[in-house]
Amino acid sequence: MDWSFASISVERIYGTMENWVMVALPMFVLMGLLLDRSGIARDLMTGFSRLLGGLRGGLAIAVTVIGLLLAATTGIIGASVVLLALLGMPAMLRQGYDPALASGTVCAVGTLGILIPPSIMLVLMADRMAMSVGDLFLGAVIPGFMLGDSTSCIW
Image (cartoon, rainbow, N blue to C red; front, side, top):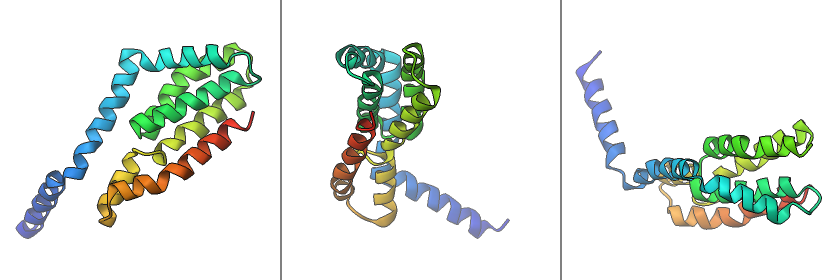
């Protein structure tokens, strides 16, 4: 290994650490952890399932709404899918939902985390493309909520 390669690697790592946009990434992870550990997500699931329980497919719509809120607060696909799978899947299966419908709902709604602002993907894309993070957030608001609305309209 050449010393010039090592110095370039160190400069590259320092340049990434010096970027202020990247400070937001650990905050997204912290937000997802706080929602999970504090029980706020479980309380949201309970409240929305009681509110929408009388509707046909009300629990699936509640999972969709919770998924949209998780996507807007955490911005991480993995955190949203895991949290929805832990909270929504058992409740939907207890209510007699088809396992394919329950898992499809969780997967479809969980993937909205990359599009609904604030999103880690949009922050990283803005940094790599040298664009404004706010412009990307504004550009993703309408498509993200249209996808969330179309997911809840399936039922």
